[in-house]
Figure: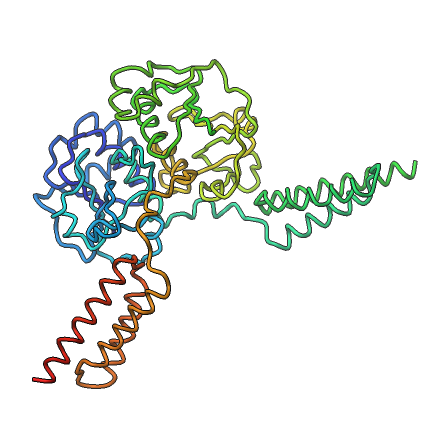
Length: 230
Length: 230
């Protein structure tokens, strides 16, 4: 279980928004370190929407507790030579297997984490952003890190991508159709084949879509052959 | 240039937050279709923080304009058989090369896009989230999609990852050190070598960190050899 730890948050709206996005990504353990505002205010509750349980279950603590692994977050990047601030990207953190008792620490709005707080962390994560304005709103930072860490990535799993074979079959049937169509020149026919290969290749077909395309081609071929027999 | 299009937004705070995260990820073209609130209100401006330029530059239009490619966003997933709602994941969209004139359309807060609006889109993108509560705040949805589409992922580029060779060299020096250390059994020594191989392997070393580890090992070896000569 990953604790989402907010250090001295002062905007109830941010706390509510964070509770919501935690629930969106399947996280539930919110820890507020020495909060500077009322996390149960109307503003916080309005922003939490259907994550009232996460908000109400927030743990209030006077200081950051002990974790097997404590991950800090920073918008301010050091250089390669500033060892304490050289961070991982969220995508890299997503590749690590986090221990059971891990905490993800977000700094104060606007100020972030001090160097001392950063040294307490096992490592840092930073969201790559525009050098012109790299500092994200804290709830956006939480959203992006949890989006990467989320392992309920499964919600599109019921939408089956076409197997390679299905894609190839759809392409084969499309090619048969092109062969049966009349084009002014053979090079135009060849172009068609190439185009369709690329279009079907790029479109990340689902199982259902591949089937539908084959149905389309077969229907067209059927109609073309009837025409020829008239 | 990608237009970020908000359909009939009604929360000024969301508009401001979206302006901010657009700037965070290097986007600047905000389009508000028939807004239901004042996008220049104090709330919007406060949330936009250092992205006042993006907010002030918002284009107000009565209806969604024409785009080479219009990408819709949805939190409600269809099944594989609901063709109009079968979406790509943000990571998949990031792999596509978007045309110059593309629009990313976000629906009304709470309601999203209607089926008719969805049919106008070339394709849909949906953020994989918890089935228990899959509907994200619109500014969080924008943040995550732009994070994936962002090509200013370069802000950590000045932090050089260690080359494979540097990593291997660090490991070799660590192994030499282990060889010079006294362990009760040879199997304990072997364990050490394996552990360090894994630890250094997993730690995504930077250039600077690899150099520092070699320095550490050499120093330790130097001290050990001095001790032996005493």
